[in-house]
Length: 73
Image (cartoon, rainbow, N blue to C red; front, side):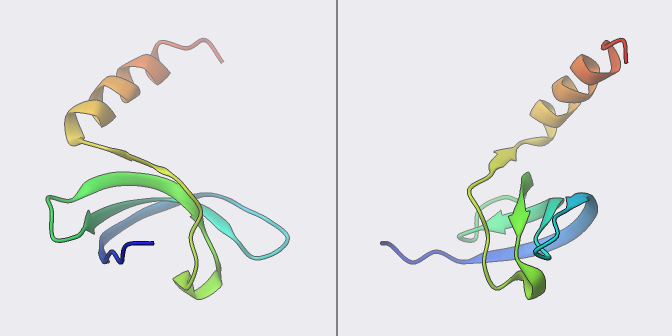
């Protein structure tokens, strides 16, 4: 597996936490020295492990916000 590096630029918030200590978070992350993107994924305590997740540009986050705001909940 190819090595990669990341930097958590800004911790935005925690969506949920499991009984095992893992937490689903939204963070602004810079992957492999590229521009930072908003990222949603599960993290182990101490951030030593992570699950697969999804990274979104600022433009995609704005569209997602519009979609979520249109939901009737």
